[in-house]
Image (cartoon, rainbow, N blue to C red; front, side, top):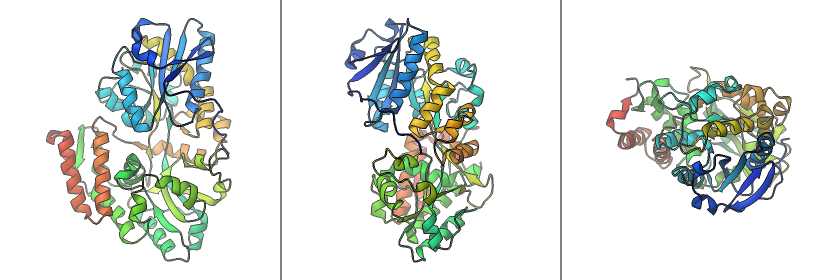
Length: 464
């Protein structure tokens, strides 16, 4: 089992942590807003990161690296700027800090989902030469490198964590439906047939679940819809990187909506009201799966952390009860399987005090040893081959090898400035078919919305 988070006292949301030669002092965060500016003190490196709830895993990772760095560079001080906020609020608060030289940190923890939007807004500096010159750049997964590369070809982040997605299934539920313990679908129809078999069996479990609709936010787009869409013909995905245009008129988009419509029409999933519950994931992880009430779930590599010994409701039996299957492409063509990857990394803001010094601390943060410790504590998938080769990493979770392996064929979202709005349009289209609209009508409405978002000149018909 993966070890639980490091035990450390949490910081007040209005404070940050200063480390100088390994000594920590809590100082009011308000001082940042009133300081003379990031450029006024070249001996200070400020790093902003998300601190969600009582979790202190990131804080501990950065604190340990800061102590190591300060011991080697006693003339430099590292200040931790924890932003206590939900994911959406973190993006906003982080952007506010980066928007002015008076408040800007020198390093920021960036989600690949928002990174290129921040590039477009002028918040981040390119770090191409520094990144490609780093000794472990060659160990970074290709898909992760693409995710931090802007349309100008410059690199804007050092990838650290990632996640991949697959079909989690309850062996006992599938067994009751006459399905094998090593079940692996080859097409979408295989998934639907398995769900129908569960529905028609003596099991009282809900056959299948995928995140759908606007209340689920990006989970619906990424864990749900895009796991379908990227299994269709490549010319029908969201964005063409060569022409730099968003795709409309996609048959694959309609087919993906048809799959969503089918699971509701045939009673293969939870009732609509539960799909529209923004907290349904907690019910799934803490109740439905442990109590054998759900057969299959499309979800990410991280969910087993909810069953760890340190979790609110431990489920030590999960490695024996839960199975994993690759998500198949629509008809088994292409690579045969598909997964979407996300993840976080470190970036350098436009108003950095000293780019080279900031990157020196970044190198300490992303050393092999520090990233192994961080991955184990945080229960995430690494983007680096050197970290993945470490025996401690390989053994920290029963599922880590599987989810690390499928990263090799992962796709990333086109996380351009327009993507958050496009993602919202996907969720609206899903919800339309969930509530009775036709896939064709929902897809047409999506196309019209995308044109409104990016402009007619920035779209192209699928296959054009």
